[in-house]
Image (cartoon, rainbow, N blue to C red; front, side, top):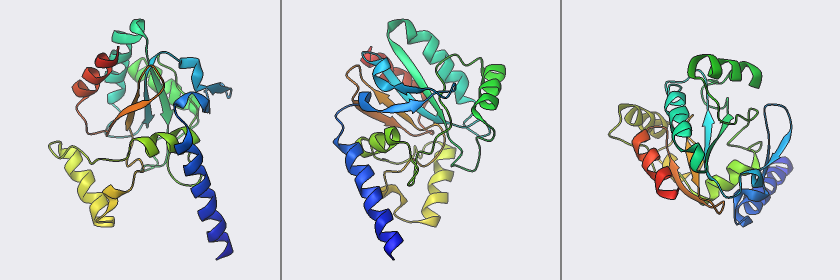
Length: 202
């Protein structure tokens, strides 16, 4: 009981601290070279933060993300890739294995960070902050994958959509030039809508 109480207060503190931030610039994350990178490195740019996986049905989105990055990077746009193994263990291997896969199959050139947790007590603070600002709003039920994911999660918990946690790989958070999260896209969202939202901020 004591351990549960301590865990509860720890999670509450982390959530409060994340929610108290006014932008993403106070957060850091470890890059693929094991260096801590402060998010203010990207100050003034439009940012798309994505949790990714290399063995997922949505993995081909890497190709669309790279195309998006190449189209808009000269105008101050960057994609920050955070591999995560929490969903179906679909991001196996270390960051160097993941980078090799992404380079070989999708010619990825946008920044890739070390593997992270995005949910639970070990969630990296950046993602705790993003979830607090942009909670889950549901999958696109016009997408067959969206229907399947909704059915799968609803069978486990009828109120799963009330929880702000990230539900699956390739959830995307769009950040404006002032470091404020402005839009969340679930993996079932049409990439054309993502492109239009990015362009609208540039």
